[in-house]
Image 1 (cartoon, rainbow, N blue to C red):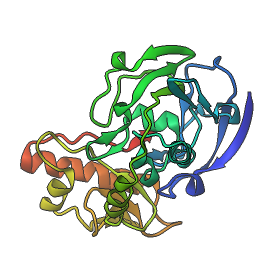
Image 2: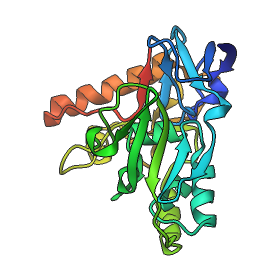
Image 3: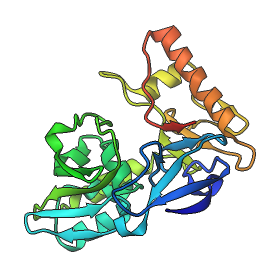
Length: 260
């Protein structure tokens, strides 16, 4: 198994982190102690993190299986979107506006509003075994998948919806332009994390350059690359959790994945 050094201050979308050794998985056989990373678009990784791994290039592919499209776990959202667009397939139009790898997108059931991965997801290859998507506990921004996603199969439905692209593009316009991990917290049932964070004074609150955007209160952003660090990010997140809990009695659930 090959080992490479990844500088997470460049690799992660929030641009916070240290240079750490990462193992490259090139087969279904791997050490179960490893923490598998995607493309780093919703991650915070501690400088002390160990046992990190990524999928190798042999899991970057798209195959037409007739009634289904199979996508490898390390395939980018941009590549998946382009394939569906070029082949007039519908169901994943929102990927034009979402970064990430297939594995990470499926793991968190990524999406925009009512559009999400599970919409056309048929089955997932977890630890080398294909499992029906209905058995994976897929819900709003989460699944019960416990293992490595090596690939997934999607229902092949003709009719790419060009009209949705403008909608997703407009939604992206409200996102901050600074390096970010995206939404820090999931929306509680019947409410919005951004509303709660703004109500407790966290909108525009920063420690050492990392904090919640003035533009979108639930976006954790990095306004000072090279100064913002993991410890500061954790301070901001924990303070936000405490304030919302103390004032509203709501325990926010993190959408950002934290690896320590």
